[in-house]
Amino acid sequence: MFEFCNNICYAVITSSAGDMYDVFLKVNDEGRLELCDMGATLMRLSYTFELNSDTRMEILGDILQSSCIENNRGNLYVATTEDDFLPNLLNFSLTMSKIVNMDILKWIIRRNS
Image (cartoon, rainbow, N blue to C red):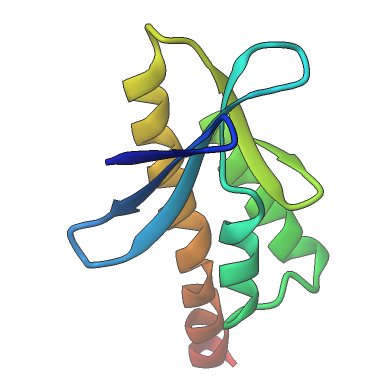
């Protein structure tokens, strides 16, 4: 499931719908374990959906806040421990799925206009 490269552990998570998400496990600058996406989730979202309004940014912020995921200039991450690794991995991958699927909002907006 995970591959190692330059002290960073990399995995591709596949959902039941076939969506694939890149997840990285690394040691951050403070020496703590961190799950992150290296910017892949927001980049993937940008192919189909623009975060070009306060409302869209607020929705993204709400998703991240409700999942305890941080955003550092597009890199989504959460600190983890060995004991909390699996629940954090599940939460992280579900959050990525919610974000990538934000593009459904454009269909709702079109339908309501």
